[in-house]
Image (cartoon, rainbow, N blue to C red; front, side):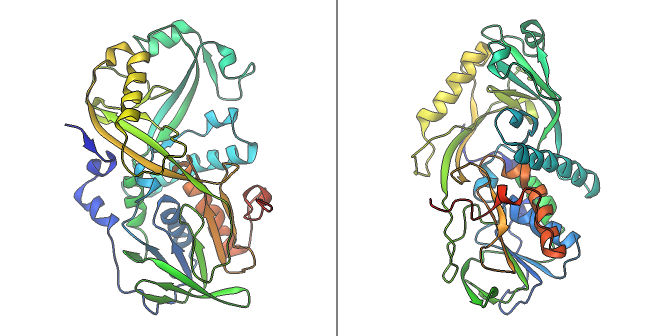
Length: 378
Protein backbone atom coordinates (compact mmCIF):
# COMPACT_ATOMS: atom_id res chain seq x y z
CA UNK A 1 0.00 0.00 0.00
CA UNK A 2 1.28 3.46 -0.90
CA UNK A 3 0.94 6.11 1.78
CA UNK A 4 0.46 9.72 0.74
CA UNK A 5 2.70 11.74 3.03
CA UNK A 6 6.37 11.96 3.86
CA UNK A 7 8.08 9.01 5.53
CA UNK A 8 9.74 11.12 8.21
CA UNK A 9 6.95 11.21 10.79
CA UNK A 10 6.55 7.44 10.70
CA UNK A 11 10.24 7.05 11.58
CA UNK A 12 9.85 9.03 14.82
CA UNK A 13 9.32 7.69 18.30
CA UNK A 14 6.12 8.59 20.13
CA UNK A 15 7.99 11.09 22.30
CA UNK A 16 9.53 12.78 19.26
CA UNK A 17 6.11 13.10 17.63
CA UNK A 18 4.74 14.63 20.82
CA UNK A 19 7.44 17.31 20.82
CA UNK A 20 6.28 18.52 17.39
CA UNK A 21 2.97 19.57 18.96
CA UNK A 22 4.56 21.14 22.04
CA UNK A 23 2.52 24.02 23.45
CA UNK A 24 3.66 25.67 26.67
CA UNK A 25 1.79 28.26 28.73
CA UNK A 26 -0.29 31.01 27.10
CA UNK A 27 1.73 33.57 25.16
CA UNK A 28 -0.64 36.46 25.79
CA UNK A 29 1.25 39.29 27.46
CA UNK A 30 4.61 37.53 27.14
CA UNK A 31 7.73 39.72 27.05
CA UNK A 32 10.53 37.48 25.74
CA UNK A 33 13.97 38.84 25.00
CA UNK A 34 13.80 37.04 21.64
CA UNK A 35 10.65 35.99 19.82
CA UNK A 36 11.09 33.59 16.89
CA UNK A 37 8.14 33.41 14.50
CA UNK A 38 8.16 30.14 12.57
CA UNK A 39 8.62 26.54 13.67
CA UNK A 40 10.34 25.02 10.67
CA UNK A 41 13.93 23.85 10.86
CA UNK A 42 15.34 27.37 10.45
CA UNK A 43 13.11 28.86 13.15
CA UNK A 44 13.74 26.03 15.61
CA UNK A 45 17.49 26.19 14.95
CA UNK A 46 17.46 29.96 15.49
CA UNK A 47 15.57 29.69 18.77
CA UNK A 48 17.98 26.97 19.88
CA UNK A 49 21.05 29.05 18.96
CA UNK A 50 19.71 32.11 20.79
CA UNK A 51 18.94 30.06 23.89
CA UNK A 52 22.39 28.42 23.79
CA UNK A 53 23.99 31.86 23.45
CA UNK A 54 22.23 32.99 26.63
CA UNK A 55 20.26 35.82 25.03
CA UNK A 56 17.70 35.97 27.81
CA UNK A 57 14.25 34.44 27.48
CA UNK A 58 13.50 32.90 24.08
CA UNK A 59 9.99 32.09 22.84
CA UNK A 60 9.10 30.35 19.56
CA UNK A 61 5.62 30.42 18.05
CA UNK A 62 4.34 28.36 15.13
CA UNK A 63 0.98 28.41 13.36
CA UNK A 64 0.70 24.63 13.14
CA UNK A 65 2.97 21.90 14.43
CA UNK A 66 6.74 22.14 14.42
CA UNK A 67 8.28 21.01 11.17
CA UNK A 68 5.26 21.53 8.94
CA UNK A 69 5.63 23.02 5.49
CA UNK A 70 8.85 22.65 3.51
CA UNK A 71 10.76 21.18 6.46
CA UNK A 72 8.54 18.13 6.83
CA UNK A 73 8.62 17.41 3.10
CA UNK A 74 12.35 17.94 2.51
CA UNK A 75 14.85 15.24 1.57
CA UNK A 76 17.03 16.07 4.57
CA UNK A 77 20.21 15.86 2.48
CA UNK A 78 23.27 17.71 3.80
CA UNK A 79 25.47 17.96 0.72
CA UNK A 80 27.39 21.25 0.54
CA UNK A 81 30.26 20.08 -1.68
CA UNK A 82 28.21 19.35 -4.84
CA UNK A 83 27.10 22.99 -4.72
CA UNK A 84 30.63 23.99 -5.75
CA UNK A 85 29.48 23.54 -9.34
CA UNK A 86 26.42 25.77 -9.08
CA UNK A 87 26.54 28.23 -6.17
CA UNK A 88 28.61 31.35 -5.46
CA UNK A 89 31.41 31.03 -2.90
CA UNK A 90 29.62 32.77 0.00
CA UNK A 91 26.70 30.36 -0.35
CA UNK A 92 29.00 27.31 -0.41
CA UNK A 93 30.75 28.66 2.69
CA UNK A 94 27.38 28.93 4.48
CA UNK A 95 26.51 25.38 3.41
CA UNK A 96 29.83 23.97 4.61
CA UNK A 97 29.37 25.74 7.92
CA UNK A 98 25.90 24.21 8.09
CA UNK A 99 27.20 20.66 7.78
CA UNK A 100 29.93 21.30 10.35
CA UNK A 101 27.35 22.72 12.75
CA UNK A 102 25.15 19.64 12.26
CA UNK A 103 28.15 17.52 13.19
CA UNK A 104 28.73 19.63 16.29
CA UNK A 105 25.09 19.26 17.31
CA UNK A 106 25.21 15.50 16.79
CA UNK A 107 28.05 15.31 19.30
CA UNK A 108 26.75 17.88 21.77
CA UNK A 109 23.06 16.97 22.19
CA UNK A 110 22.05 13.90 24.22
CA UNK A 111 21.05 11.35 21.61
CA UNK A 112 22.27 13.61 18.82
CA UNK A 113 20.09 15.04 16.06
CA UNK A 114 19.94 11.90 13.92
CA UNK A 115 22.82 12.80 11.62
CA UNK A 116 23.76 10.03 9.18
CA UNK A 117 27.11 10.30 7.43
CA UNK A 118 26.76 9.52 3.71
CA UNK A 119 28.97 9.69 0.65
CA UNK A 120 27.72 11.41 -2.52
CA UNK A 121 28.17 10.08 -6.04
CA UNK A 122 27.13 12.24 -8.97
CA UNK A 123 26.76 10.29 -12.20
CA UNK A 124 27.72 11.79 -15.54
CA UNK A 125 28.22 10.36 -19.05
CA UNK A 126 31.80 11.74 -19.02
CA UNK A 127 33.98 13.96 -16.86
CA UNK A 128 32.91 17.08 -18.73
CA UNK A 129 29.42 16.48 -17.38
CA UNK A 130 30.52 18.42 -14.30
CA UNK A 131 33.62 20.49 -15.03
CA UNK A 132 37.00 19.97 -16.70
CA UNK A 133 38.79 20.70 -13.41
CA UNK A 134 37.26 19.17 -10.32
CA UNK A 135 37.15 21.26 -7.14
CA UNK A 136 38.56 20.23 -3.80
CA UNK A 137 37.37 17.07 -2.15
CA UNK A 138 36.12 15.51 -5.40
CA UNK A 139 37.39 12.18 -6.75
CA UNK A 140 36.65 11.44 -10.38
CA UNK A 141 35.75 7.77 -10.80
CA UNK A 142 35.92 5.93 -14.09
CA UNK A 143 33.01 3.81 -15.32
CA UNK A 144 34.50 0.60 -13.95
CA UNK A 145 34.81 2.02 -10.43
CA UNK A 146 31.28 3.42 -10.58
CA UNK A 147 29.97 0.03 -11.68
CA UNK A 148 31.63 -1.53 -8.62
CA UNK A 149 29.82 0.93 -6.33
CA UNK A 150 26.49 0.82 -8.18
CA UNK A 151 26.07 -2.58 -9.82
CA UNK A 152 23.44 -2.92 -12.50
CA UNK A 153 23.49 0.56 -14.04
CA UNK A 154 21.71 0.56 -17.39
CA UNK A 155 24.75 2.05 -19.11
CA UNK A 156 28.36 2.77 -18.16
CA UNK A 157 28.75 6.04 -16.28
CA UNK A 158 31.63 7.97 -14.83
CA UNK A 159 31.09 9.92 -11.65
CA UNK A 160 32.18 12.56 -9.18
CA UNK A 161 32.61 11.07 -5.70
CA UNK A 162 32.55 13.15 -2.51
CA UNK A 163 33.03 11.58 0.89
CA UNK A 164 31.50 12.52 4.24
CA UNK A 165 28.38 14.40 3.33
CA UNK A 166 25.23 13.62 5.32
CA UNK A 167 21.50 13.48 5.79
CA UNK A 168 18.94 13.75 8.58
CA UNK A 169 15.31 12.95 9.12
CA UNK A 170 14.26 16.62 9.21
CA UNK A 171 11.44 16.04 11.69
CA UNK A 172 13.72 14.12 14.05
CA UNK A 173 16.22 16.99 13.91
CA UNK A 174 13.45 19.48 14.69
CA UNK A 175 12.18 17.37 17.59
CA UNK A 176 15.64 16.86 19.08
CA UNK A 177 16.39 20.60 18.97
CA UNK A 178 12.93 21.58 20.21
CA UNK A 179 13.31 19.54 23.37
CA UNK A 180 16.05 22.00 24.35
CA UNK A 181 14.00 25.15 23.80
CA UNK A 182 12.82 27.08 26.85
CA UNK A 183 9.37 28.01 25.51
CA UNK A 184 7.38 26.84 22.48
CA UNK A 185 3.80 27.61 21.49
CA UNK A 186 2.37 25.67 18.54
CA UNK A 187 -1.04 26.54 17.16
CA UNK A 188 -0.26 30.25 17.52
CA UNK A 189 -0.27 32.42 14.39
CA UNK A 190 1.38 35.83 14.15
CA UNK A 191 -1.13 38.28 12.65
CA UNK A 192 0.25 41.79 13.02
CA UNK A 193 3.06 43.96 14.31
CA UNK A 194 3.07 47.34 16.00
CA UNK A 195 6.07 49.56 15.29
CA UNK A 196 7.19 52.57 17.29
CA UNK A 197 9.96 54.64 15.75
CA UNK A 198 12.36 51.96 14.47
CA UNK A 199 11.37 49.08 16.73
CA UNK A 200 8.79 46.33 16.82
CA UNK A 201 7.09 46.85 20.17
CA UNK A 202 4.27 44.34 19.85
CA UNK A 203 3.45 41.26 17.81
CA UNK A 204 -0.22 40.39 17.58
CA UNK A 205 -1.05 36.69 17.49
CA UNK A 206 -4.11 34.47 17.44
CA UNK A 207 -3.58 33.96 21.18
CA UNK A 208 -2.91 37.53 22.29
CA UNK A 209 -0.11 40.06 21.98
CA UNK A 210 3.61 39.58 22.67
CA UNK A 211 6.08 42.37 23.47
CA UNK A 212 9.52 41.12 22.42
CA UNK A 213 12.93 42.66 22.89
CA UNK A 214 13.92 41.30 19.48
CA UNK A 215 12.02 39.31 16.89
CA UNK A 216 13.14 36.93 14.15
CA UNK A 217 10.79 36.05 11.31
CA UNK A 218 11.66 32.59 9.96
CA UNK A 219 8.51 31.81 8.03
CA UNK A 220 9.79 30.26 4.80
CA UNK A 221 8.62 33.06 2.55
CA UNK A 222 8.79 36.66 3.85
CA UNK A 223 5.99 37.26 6.38
CA UNK A 224 2.86 39.12 5.36
CA UNK A 225 1.57 40.77 8.53
CA UNK A 226 -0.56 43.81 9.20
CA UNK A 227 1.68 46.73 10.08
CA UNK A 228 4.88 45.22 8.67
CA UNK A 229 6.10 47.19 5.63
CA UNK A 230 8.02 44.42 3.90
CA UNK A 231 8.12 43.82 0.16
CA UNK A 232 10.57 41.14 -0.92
CA UNK A 233 9.89 39.12 -4.09
CA UNK A 234 9.47 35.39 -3.56
CA UNK A 235 7.61 32.41 -4.87
CA UNK A 236 7.46 28.72 -4.12
CA UNK A 237 8.26 25.66 -6.20
CA UNK A 238 6.43 22.39 -5.83
CA UNK A 239 8.41 19.17 -5.74
CA UNK A 240 7.48 15.49 -5.55
CA UNK A 241 9.31 12.71 -3.74
CA UNK A 242 8.84 9.02 -3.14
CA UNK A 243 10.25 6.25 -0.98
CA UNK A 244 10.29 2.73 -2.37
CA UNK A 245 9.36 -0.48 -0.67
CA UNK A 246 12.32 -2.41 0.66
CA UNK A 247 14.58 -3.58 -2.18
CA UNK A 248 17.73 -5.64 -2.57
CA UNK A 249 19.40 -2.72 -4.36
CA UNK A 250 22.01 -1.13 -2.12
CA UNK A 251 23.44 2.26 -3.04
CA UNK A 252 26.65 3.76 -1.66
CA UNK A 253 24.83 6.63 0.07
CA UNK A 254 23.49 9.38 -2.19
CA UNK A 255 23.61 8.67 -5.92
CA UNK A 256 22.58 11.69 -7.99
CA UNK A 257 20.32 11.88 -9.87
CA UNK A 258 19.08 8.37 -9.05
CA UNK A 259 18.20 7.96 -5.36
CA UNK A 260 19.42 8.00 -1.76
CA UNK A 261 19.75 4.90 0.35
CA UNK A 262 17.79 5.29 3.60
CA UNK A 263 16.82 2.93 6.40
CA UNK A 264 15.33 -0.57 6.00
CA UNK A 265 16.62 -1.09 2.47
CA UNK A 266 14.40 1.68 1.08
CA UNK A 267 15.34 4.30 -1.48
CA UNK A 268 14.39 8.00 -1.50
CA UNK A 269 13.98 9.53 -4.94
CA UNK A 270 12.63 12.68 -6.55
CA UNK A 271 12.89 16.32 -5.73
CA UNK A 272 11.22 17.52 -8.92
CA UNK A 273 10.68 21.11 -10.02
CA UNK A 274 6.99 21.41 -10.87
CA UNK A 275 7.04 25.03 -11.97
CA UNK A 276 3.64 26.71 -12.00
CA UNK A 277 1.84 23.87 -10.21
CA UNK A 278 0.15 25.40 -7.15
CA UNK A 279 -2.12 22.45 -6.40
CA UNK A 280 -1.40 20.77 -3.04
CA UNK A 281 -2.24 17.29 -4.29
CA UNK A 282 0.26 14.62 -5.27
CA UNK A 283 0.20 14.09 -9.03
CA UNK A 284 0.34 10.41 -10.04
CA UNK A 285 1.95 11.26 -13.38
CA UNK A 286 4.90 12.94 -11.66
CA UNK A 287 5.34 10.03 -9.22
CA UNK A 288 5.17 7.61 -12.16
CA UNK A 289 7.85 9.66 -13.90
CA UNK A 290 10.17 9.36 -10.89
CA UNK A 291 9.62 5.58 -10.80
CA UNK A 292 10.30 5.31 -14.53
CA UNK A 293 13.53 7.24 -14.04
CA UNK A 294 14.62 4.83 -11.31
CA UNK A 295 14.05 1.83 -13.56
CA UNK A 296 15.79 3.53 -16.49
CA UNK A 297 18.92 4.02 -14.38
CA UNK A 298 18.75 0.68 -12.54
CA UNK A 299 16.64 -1.89 -14.42
CA UNK A 300 16.47 -4.07 -11.28
CA UNK A 301 14.13 -1.43 -9.87
CA UNK A 302 11.54 -1.91 -12.61
CA UNK A 303 8.19 -2.45 -10.93
CA UNK A 304 9.49 -1.66 -7.45
CA UNK A 305 6.69 -0.83 -5.02
CA UNK A 306 6.22 2.69 -3.73
CA UNK A 307 5.74 2.93 0.03
CA UNK A 308 5.41 6.72 0.38
CA UNK A 309 4.68 9.53 -2.04
CA UNK A 310 4.39 13.22 -1.26
CA UNK A 311 4.93 16.76 -2.44
CA UNK A 312 5.93 19.99 -0.77
CA UNK A 313 6.48 23.65 -1.66
CA UNK A 314 9.97 25.14 -1.35
CA UNK A 315 10.23 28.92 -0.85
CA UNK A 316 12.69 30.85 -2.98
CA UNK A 317 13.77 34.33 -4.01
CA UNK A 318 14.52 35.32 -7.63
CA UNK A 319 18.26 34.64 -7.29
CA UNK A 320 17.68 31.35 -5.43
CA UNK A 321 19.64 32.57 -2.40
CA UNK A 322 18.17 33.19 1.06
CA UNK A 323 17.66 36.45 2.86
CA UNK A 324 19.47 36.71 6.20
CA UNK A 325 19.13 40.31 7.30
CA UNK A 326 17.53 42.85 9.55
CA UNK A 327 14.06 43.89 8.46
CA UNK A 328 14.77 47.12 6.56
CA UNK A 329 14.20 50.18 8.73
CA UNK A 330 13.95 48.28 12.01
CA UNK A 331 16.63 47.86 14.67
CA UNK A 332 15.24 44.91 16.61
CA UNK A 333 13.72 42.71 13.90
CA UNK A 334 15.46 40.12 11.72
CA UNK A 335 14.32 38.06 8.75
CA UNK A 336 15.47 34.86 7.10
CA UNK A 337 13.54 33.46 4.16
CA UNK A 338 13.78 31.76 0.77
CA UNK A 339 16.13 28.91 1.64
CA UNK A 340 14.67 26.89 -1.26
CA UNK A 341 16.45 23.50 -1.47
CA UNK A 342 19.04 24.08 1.27
CA UNK A 343 16.94 25.02 4.28
CA UNK A 344 17.81 21.88 6.26
CA UNK A 345 21.50 22.18 5.43
CA UNK A 346 21.74 25.91 6.14
CA UNK A 347 19.51 26.02 9.23
CA UNK A 348 22.19 25.78 11.95
CA UNK A 349 24.66 28.09 10.19
CA UNK A 350 21.91 30.65 9.53
CA UNK A 351 20.90 30.36 13.18
CA UNK A 352 24.48 31.00 14.29
CA UNK A 353 24.63 34.13 12.11
CA UNK A 354 21.39 35.47 13.57
CA UNK A 355 22.24 34.72 17.20
CA UNK A 356 25.60 36.52 16.87
CA UNK A 357 23.91 39.47 15.21
CA UNK A 358 21.28 39.73 17.95
CA UNK A 359 23.66 39.23 20.86
CA UNK A 360 26.79 41.05 19.68
CA UNK A 361 25.61 43.24 16.79
CA UNK A 362 27.90 41.33 14.41
CA UNK A 363 26.35 41.05 10.92
CA UNK A 364 27.31 38.16 8.62
CA UNK A 365 30.33 38.08 6.38
CA UNK A 366 29.35 39.06 2.82
CA UNK A 367 26.27 40.78 4.26
CA UNK A 368 25.22 42.15 0.87
CA UNK A 369 24.86 38.59 -0.45
CA UNK A 370 22.04 37.94 2.02
CA UNK A 371 20.55 41.45 2.06
CA UNK A 372 16.80 41.95 2.06
CA UNK A 373 17.27 45.05 -0.09
CA UNK A 374 19.17 43.38 -2.94
CA UNK A 375 15.96 43.04 -4.95
CA UNK A 376 15.36 46.77 -5.30
CA UNK A 377 13.59 47.36 -8.60
CA UNK A 378 11.92 43.94 -8.77
